Image (cartoon, rainbow, N blue to C red; front, side, top):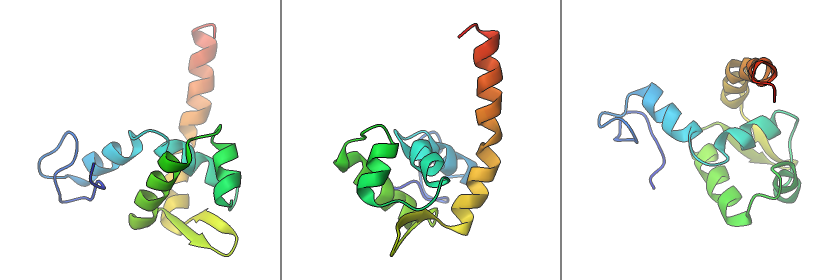
Length: 109
């Protein structure tokens, strides 16, 4: 599966509208999870794998390559970290965490 780049065909959009490219990316297994976990701070590959509930190394490697290519994650001396663009994205999606807790309570979960 190709990296979802705005302006190219992505899942759900032949024209690759930016929102559809983002939704394609975030809908991929563990994309959101990696972003969510890196918000806690930089992590080595192994530490990030542990934060992500033992995600398989191959899947984590694939997601990191995609997120790096899309300027959401960077690799530095401390390991992997969110870029400023990645931090901005996290700040947009973070309120979903609170919403989901309220939703779970309403459902009796």
